[in-house]
Image 1 (cartoon, rainbow, N blue to C red):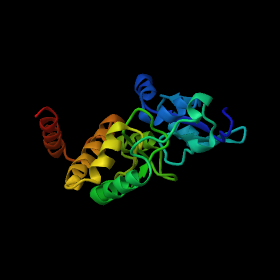
Image 2 (cartoon, rainbow, N blue to C red):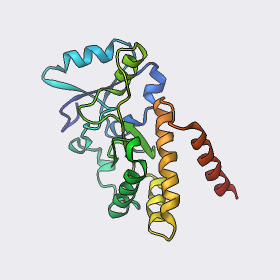
Image 3 (cartoon, rainbow, N blue to C red):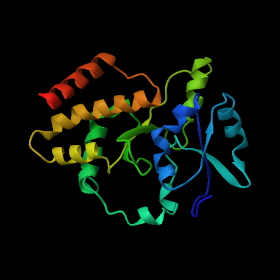
Length: 213
């Protein structure tokens, strides 16, 4: 375990290759933190029952409570300067995302776990593991769907550009459309359906038209 690490981290899912590419792993990989990749259907159940090993609790990386800030980063990364898009600009962007997405998500937060991805979905601390909830719903042991937390990566170029765009005239409308696109993107990566496939297609068409027009 790394210096400052106080939990054993894991992620559950159906396919090893898909788990290895999960955006929730990016921050752990960057800090050299080992994560257990669990693909047996029973894993989510026994981990929640056992809870700990040698006084170290098991924690899912798909939950919002994974505090990577306590874990020492490699020396090469420790002195990284803050990049454009962080700070006050991203705070404003997060606030607009919250206002735009409203009841579609439980919360919107700046992420410390993302490195290469712009966004990801996580379960809030105290909520059920995302894969375990999916299994229970498949077996009709659970009704409804928990709202997720959308985490945005302040260091990603897309997020940095959106934060800058927000400060310009007419930028709010463009950012609003981008918020829905990014939420749908996070759902697709997580293997969950988008809330409105037609609206997603229209927004994607509009974004592509602006990009190539």
